[in-house]
Image 1 (cartoon, one colour):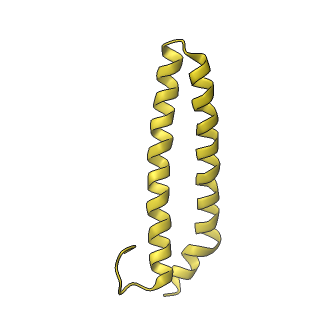
Image 2: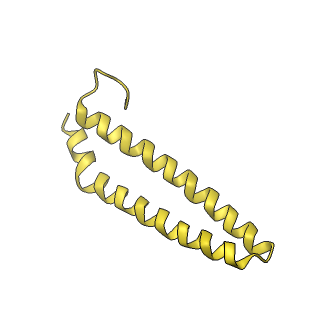
Length: 79
């Protein structure tokens, strides 16, 4: 849908937002696994850095969710 030239712009926006969130979830999973491995290996400095990145990624994901739930999805549903 995101690349469908016949789709309404609001529907494309919702599809693009969903795609970005999918990528964010993948990043969160990867950083979470890396943090766990760093802890298992005793590299707590790296684990702390990765935990900070996870916090930032989570915050961005929550912003995307709010945007979708409060605006983008409603506009897409109207089309």
